[in-house]
Image (cartoon, rainbow, N blue to C red; front, top):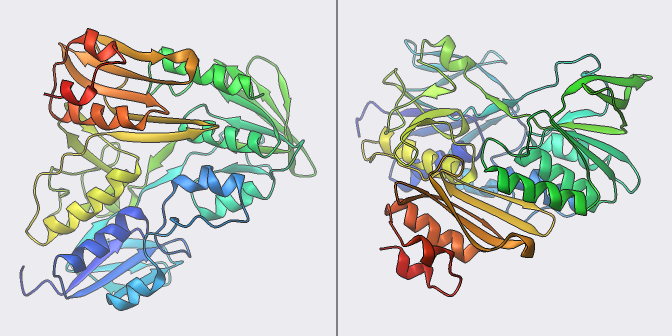
Length: 410
């Protein structure tokens, strides 16, 4: 480590930023660390926002915050919360904040995450139309969930379906509008989309798939209905828009850093500017498991890449290679997936879809490249190892529930 490295600024007091700060101290860095966040809260995990916090709004999830507040004091990490980073002054070795202050920075880690996409249709700015990206969003949505309320969820991806399930569990009348021809089409195959659709319909959700949103209608500034492109009007006391995020690249672009579907980094989390690294949802990284570049929007990547960026900054980094992984809790179903779960030569079903507990292994040229499991965590663990070891098991053995998956890893 260079003696000149006296100040490190981390922009983004989120999961990636929190892990990066902790990793810097764990790896022996004793200079100044400043963690900058636009939100008033210290780093927290986002998965509870669409699940526990909506279903049980009066109970704070035990695992919400990355570290207790005392951690930052004990490890001499300065928190600058509730203030936006305005610009990177690379020549002046500083980060300029919206309040006019400057944070000294010999090196910078950008963990800026993303912005939830809004609905760009007439009425999209009406009251009670929400996105779900942060704690404030989750609390605002939860406050409107009660038995009999009409909730329209726009977007049939992970966030949309989790919100739909949570609202239904609170007794709301729920309609889901998805413009694509099937649910979660970016990350699962048609068979899994069909399973999810049936599961939500069975719980009382009304599904409008393959149609978009024409406009929103309101009264006294508050949303009252959603009109689809097919002309159907859906009663709405609350609308939640879950149509993905756009990576927050404004700071990077302003500093001349190479961007393209996020901030472009190499396998050591380094950007095109030597003084700046990036990690988390915003980082467009090479991924050896997908054989392409990707932005990974999940908890494991945020925490692991945040720590990897810290190691790289201190000169102790190794090539970062994260197996894509996500999970989603919807009603009683726990959906877990790892690797490539859309493109394959062969999909091997293990178990019965009708039972609500099954697994699917995805093979390309005989090699396991992805795995998806519904309510079978042991199978996802074995499947992840298969993907990482490029296993070539016998397809018949994969399908046979009596076979020991551990012996098929190779």
